[in-house]
Structures are given as C-alpha cells and as structure tokens.
Image (cartoon, rainbow, N blue to C red; front, side, top):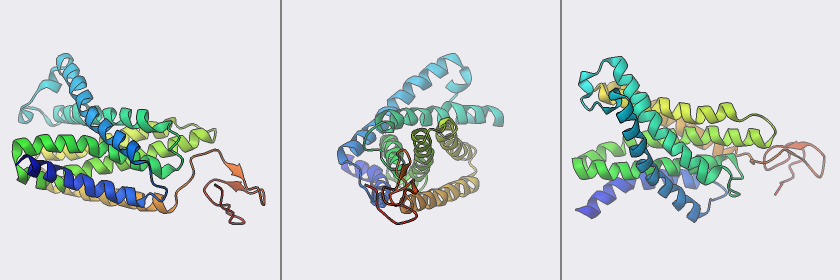
Length: 254
C-alpha cells in the first residue's frame, strides 16, 4: 500500500516536471534539480515553523473551523496564513538554491528551478494527503492542487528570471522580485479560498485559466529564451545582442 500511495502522489509531479524539463533546450544538471526538489520538501517544514509562530501570535491563524470565519476572516487566513506563508517559503529556497548559481544562464532556467521547488513541496504535501485521505484524494489532487502549485511555480520563475535579467543589464529587478512572490500568492490564495468556500465552479475556472496561462508562458519562454547576461555587441557587425543570436547578421554567441 505504501508503494501505491507514493506512486499516486509522485506521478503527476513527475509528468509536469518532465514536461517543463523537456522544454528547456539547454538542460539543467540533474543534481541541481534534485537539490531543488529536496529544497521544496524542506520548505514544507519551514512552513510548519512559520505557521506555528503566526498561530501563537494571531488567533485567527489558529482557527481550524473555517465555517466559523466570516468571508473577510477566511480571506485573511487563506491569503496570508496559508498562501503567502507557503509561497514565501518556496521563494526562499528557489532564490537561495538557484538565483546566483552559474547554471542560471537563460531566463527559462528559472522557470524550471521554481517549478521543481514548487512540485517538491507539492509532492511531500500530496503524500501526507493521500496517506490520510486515500487514493481517491490523490487522484483528485493530481488534477487540482498539483497543477495549481506548478502554475504558481511557473509564475515565480518567470518573474525571477526577468528580475535577474534586469539586474545584470543594470536595471532594477525589485518590482519583478515582488511580483515573483505576489502573483503565486494570489493564485494560491484564490484557489484555496474557493476550495474552503466549496465553490468548485470558481475553483475550476481559476485553475483552468492559470494552467492555460502557465502553459503559454512555458512554451513562449522556451521558444524565445534569452541569455541572462549583460548585453553584448556582436563581434562581427557591432549590433547589440540580448539573446543567443545577433538580430542583424545571425551570428550565434556562445
């Protein structure tokens, strides 16, 4: 039974990771991806620590009977006590393990890194849910919670990649770093709020919209990947280079 639980929990994570990994034309080191996945698992324990501190300081975050909360109180608990805390913890591990690594040389790389951390978190969380709720819960989460975490990871990676690109080209990356935390928090919070309100129609709409949007981002950024490096001038014709090729003469820059 333990093997079945592990298989059901890991299967959707494996397929989404594989999809994003295959979109990366310049593949990332397997050891780094394993490290990021472990970081995602570790972020679960950081969430427990921060959640315990918040619960001891603010009673609203300790409430387990969600039906006793008003809509506003539920929003506070869900968007701050759950979504913000979880996405913040994932953000810390994404940033710490990849933002300044030498392997991070193209913007799309950060999408891969953030998805692996997000799904490392989702994998551990999924195992706990399936162990307590059964295989049926795992099947439902494979089409709901796991894609939600993946979408949040895509958004986080997208904005962190843009932040790095701006910084290395002597521009501010602060607004992108804020969006890298804010947008995943809003996605996560909207999903959880709909779930706790038992508004499954809204939940599915939110999920479908963000999954489609995330797939579009993955496909677009993988096809139009940009080097995360200071802009250069083409040694052949002198044109400013931002990506892998000179837009004027077509020279490939290694």
